[in-house]
Amino acid sequence: MPLQRRLPKFGFKSLNRVEYNGVNLDIIQGIVDKHGITEINHEVFVGHGLASRRDRVKILGRGELKSKVNITAHAFSDTAKSAIESMGGTTTATGK
Image: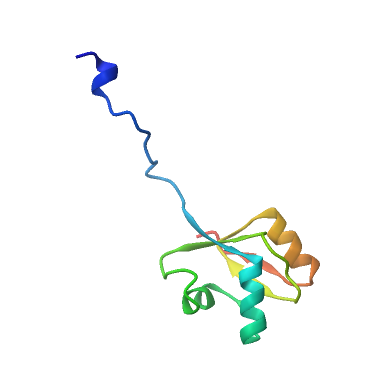
């Protein structure tokens, strides 16, 4: 049987990949409205069931932020970072 038929027909996943759990701005705004939290970090995401302890969190830009929030996460998209900073909040990327 030829080699091209013996080999598997699917791709591979890199062993060095970094997977993030995405959290959008509308979810963060919902947490702020419901609980009045202004400092959001990994423990807040875990406490609200948005991530597990081992997950890396990336803040994504879907939705609208209406209040000043200081957020600490592993990564930020460009649109999310500009939306948070335009409202007067701060973004801190831990990048672990």
